Image (cartoon, rainbow, N blue to C red):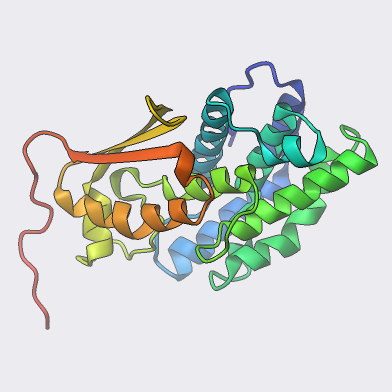
Amino acid sequence: MGLNIPIRGNEMLEKVIARVDASERLTTLWAASNVTAIDRMHINDHGPVHIKIVTNIAIKLLRLLIAGGVEPSVVHDHHLTNDDAEVIVCLAAALHDIGHVIHRHRHEELSLILAPALIEEFLNGLYSVRELTILEGEILHAIHAHRRDIQPLTIEAGAVKVADALDMESGRARIPFKSGSASIHAVSAMAIKKVEIMAGAEKPVRIHVRMSNSAGIFQLDTLLREKLTHSGLSPYVEVVGEVIGEEKKIVERYEIE
């Protein structure tokens, strides 16, 4: 599965993505993550489709932030480049959920066990020892910080954290729910129809969420608000959710047995 990220002149990102796309090991880890999530736990997917969506959203968020005058942390703190920040975000998003092959519980920390060897595989020969070491630390930080209760310390990690929460179109919300259930998690997830990410008028990023039912507000208020608040990006992001067209019924009847 190709990540299909627009390169926009970032030659280093292009080389890294080529290595990611060619990695049988990573492809296998993504597929095995879904065995844990879907086949064994019967929750929403955490495999290749999720990874492709999150990686593209994270890169888009980072580019909008940069266009809006926000300096990536690796540029500010380590005097590297915006292109390097894109590599960090890309690899952190690609690797953030691979810990599911071990277990869902604390999968963020479990991803940190598997990620270092892959990071070195993808970056070896492209960077100096100093640069590779810095990028590895930043990537691992972003993976760790996508956990809901961990505060990201970098712009790049914040982009990955928010992107993870934004994979919510058509029932893909990151709050795990069991297929066919009538829980508020499932019902609100099904209400999210379209997530649009664009440049904002007053802030660098505007997130517009189209809903078929006002139950979708639960996703925004429970998951997205929490992740955005704890991402470090809230000063740069505005979120608007609205019901488009006639409000559609999601559940016909609900009983407690």
